[in-house]
Image 1 (spheres, helix red, strand yellow):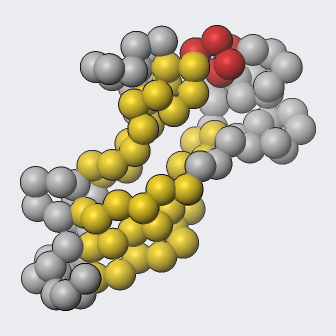
Image 2 (tube, rainbow, N blue to C red; image 1 turned 30 degrees about the vertical axis):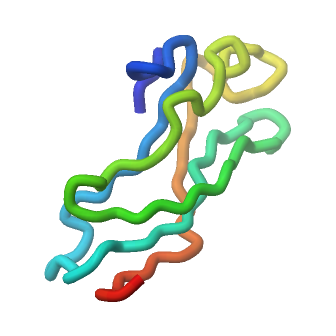
Image 3 (cartoon, one colour; image 1 turned 90 degrees about the horizontal axis):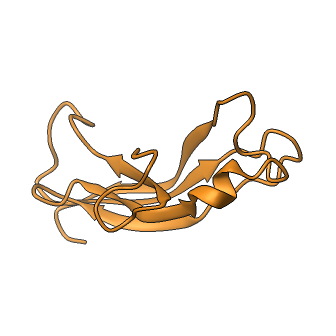
Length: 102
């Protein structure tokens, strides 16, 4: 996570999922993941939760969004994302598949 945005995501919260040491015996092929990167609305439970699909492999082990949410939207008190100077982020995996032939 980059709270003020990463390169190319200035003015936004950048949020990524990185696969490192996720299995004891590394798969022979890439790992497919379908997942949601969720920003919790602490007031109304109207969470921001876009769904992503990524193929994690050596050299391509980090996926997400450089412009996940504009900082103005994140800081808006009516959205409920930032309460008492805290945000809550979560990841929900919908599908994870390792196979030699995807």
